[in-house]
Image (spheres, rainbow, N blue to C red):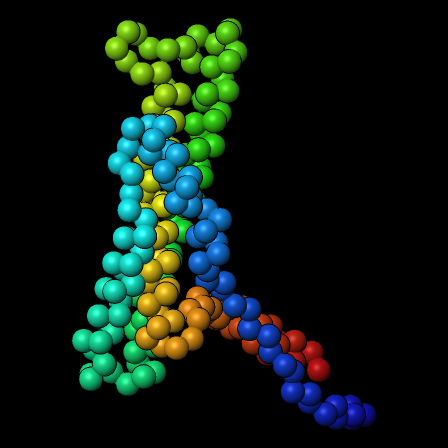
Length: 195
């Protein structure tokens, strides 16, 4: 007895994409200029020239592209700048996430101080900061640093748009499923033995 032959359907293969970090994600994670200034004033830190950082990085990328224009095609320039801007955005996002964790730890440590029954959270000996104070100061440092990196990323993104002529978007690479594919092929081959 023969089996009827089924026509093979070409199955559409969906390739999941690994999402890249966007400038909006950076803006959500890193302090803006007003918040960075409040942090600097509250903790006695240097007040950054946010616009200066942004403009400098924008000029840097534009001048870099100008120096490379004779040696790169338009597509090669776009790919190169895509990678450079992606590095700026990724760095700022990482700093913003670190800053967010530092703020959470500082808030937790400060909230514990309100509980009078906890000896380990009390202020240290005279002349030494409490653990909560050190965490607040660390969070403030991270806030200013992440803001500086945000401004550098914003400058790089603006330069990309001027040089390439389109808005920068993160590169989304396909998720590597080579092990799944090999496993599926092996399972299909084994199951065909039962036909």
